[in-house]
Image (cartoon, rainbow, N blue to C red; front, side, top):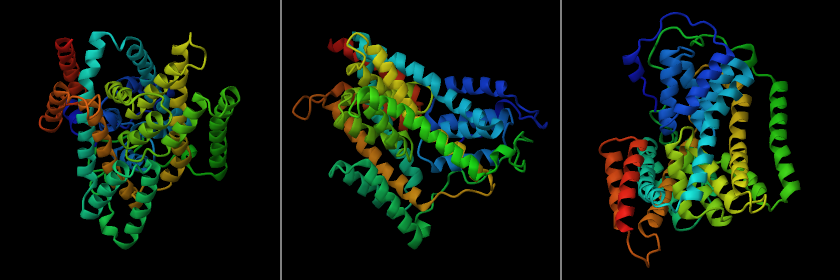
Length: 456
């Protein structure tokens, strides 16, 4: 996941022991990172590795990978959690909050603006053509994600069987995603007890093999005072986290009732935040089941468009939830019919709050436990089982997208040949020529405009 070669070739790392980094200097870096963190978790972690490990030498590779392994165990976006962890390690809780917030905030503002353009001007021919082209591209991107995760996670027949079972469960039996995660975790735990060799994740981030010179936080740098575990500090964080969740949820319930749109969004995305094992692609089926199937906040087509917007903006891909919130609030305005944008912006912001709050708590509360030892952290057998099941779930998501793109009016309608050709071209670009997601989406958007104009 981490490309540790490109930056070394461009700029040799400093061999001098680094000076202390002030909070304002760190603030400027995290702000910059929030605007350049394209490329999904792999690209974002690679950028942080190049900047923090290789070039700036704020943290050694061993400590960087040690933190990353912990973040990989957690539900939630691992790249955002890694930024929060390093910010916390350097500058206490406020440093972690600043790093984590700035990783997300630019993406939130950009997505609110793009979501408004999508809703307000989506019928304009050029805009409609752009989204006509990126829908099949998104289908190919999701298939590529399933292949990428599967090639890394499915190392034996047991894990292949779990992936197949999860696909059948969600595709044919319509089993809820949380239940699939629970059963996969239990199966992984049992398998780890009786066949441990079959439930060990290979590859990964286990060991630091490169040295780039002395770092501010080096391999043997003792944990700072604030990174030492204290029961009182843990209880205080749990209480603060409970208040930060309960207070807005209580106010929403008082203002709109438990069945209100904003209240249900807060509750739904809190649950989604605790189920994002395996990255954003893994939780998207759950978001679809709830936001599209149960609540009707947006349509299947809008869900595909939202994922495309999420792919083209910086920040974690799970920020697609801001699009879901904006569209749901805009279409179901709770501040009167004359203020749909305000409703959409408030909904997007609240959804982001409830989605990312657990990530901050996991890092600030669990960080001292992680820093208590610098030995290699191992992936657990339950996580191995969940990761295998996630592959089947993502494949089901790809089929869902493909159906709505290639047969926009259902199987009884016509097959959309231009969309099929764009999807095939996108797949070839991703699988054969290893093109980046942004390049693929941009090219497919141009093809979509051309096809839309010709049809028009």
